[in-house]
Structures are given as structure tokens and as C-alpha cells.
Figure (cartoon, rainbow, N blue to C red):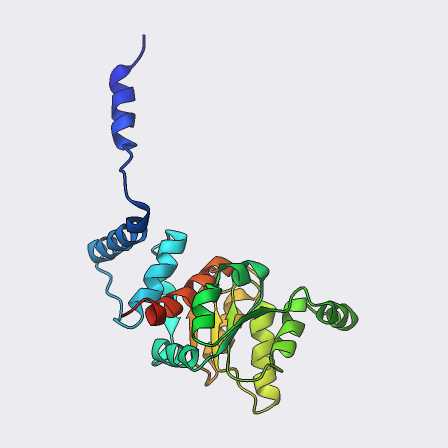
Length: 225
């Protein structure tokens, strides 16, 4: 015998709400804000758009606890972008996810050197990762650079090593690699430096998170007014 009551209950739980395409993001952020309030979580005003976009990308409210910002980080990153800073990522996925039109409108460009032939050759010769060597190549870029690392802890470690080896400093570091090997230690190293940063403590992160952080900053600058 068919259980119509059970089917009706499931149907009601899965009721689809019609939302206009242009309203989906706005509604999503409203839901996120309400859920944060329900959980008793309060975000700093300047950091809220970034953390909320990370939650929007991941549907993971743990980020409200683990996203970590150096003093004035958001304001510093936005100022760099307004002055035409470039962004360097450690994956083509993050490269694809960052809004290039918004970045270009501010005078910047995004780069990823992971597929660069010279980087691949050097990495193999030195028995290290392409991510580490790509940081060395990125160091040669003119002008301020925001490093957005979402995959390779070795990229963060190499940035830290280069800072210890000389007076060179990246303009800003977004450190959100995901994984289990050296991930947490690499993030902690960046937070020990004098470089402004946005880091997600713990094992979580990813290229999509790195791109989300970049886009949150870009949208704050390009969607107003």
C-alpha cells in the first residue's frame, strides 16, 4: 500500500521557491546573515562582506570562526586594488574564478604561473613544487601584488622563506590552502610575518575560497555607487 502521507511530507520539505536570478545572491546573503544571528555570531563590519562571501561559496558556517584578519586587512587590500595591484594565484581554478573584469576596471590583472614551462623545468630540477617556484616568478612582477593561495601550502612556505632571505615583502597574502600536510603550519608562518593577510585557520580552504575572498574585495569596490 502506497504511503501518501509520507510522500506529502517529503514533498512539503522539498518545496521549491521561485526566485528571480538577480535576486538569488541577495536572498542567499540575507539567509546567511540571519543564520549568523541565530548562532550568536557577530562579524566585524569591514570583514563581514568577505567572510559572508566565503560562507556563500562553501555553505560552511565554520568560516565565521576561522577566518582570520591582520589589523586593517580589508582596508589595506582594498587600497592596494584601488591602486592597480595585481593578483597571483597558485591554481588555474582560482584564476578562472576571480572576476577579471572587475579587477581590470581598477587597473589590475590576475596571474597564475603553474603551467609556465620555465616553472615546471625548475621545479623538476630542484625537486620542489611548481607552486613554490611560481612564487619566485611572481616576485619579479612590477608593482604591488596580492598573493591568493588556495591550494598549495608550499607556496605559502616559499613566500615566508623569501621574506626571511631578504627585505622583499609581498603587498598582501590571502592564505587559504586546503588539506592535511603542512597546511596549518604554513598558514601560521604567514601570520607570524609583518605582511597584511587574510588567512583561514585550520585545514579548510581551497581555490574557490581564495577566489571568493578576492571577489568580495573587488565587489566592495566596484559594485557601490
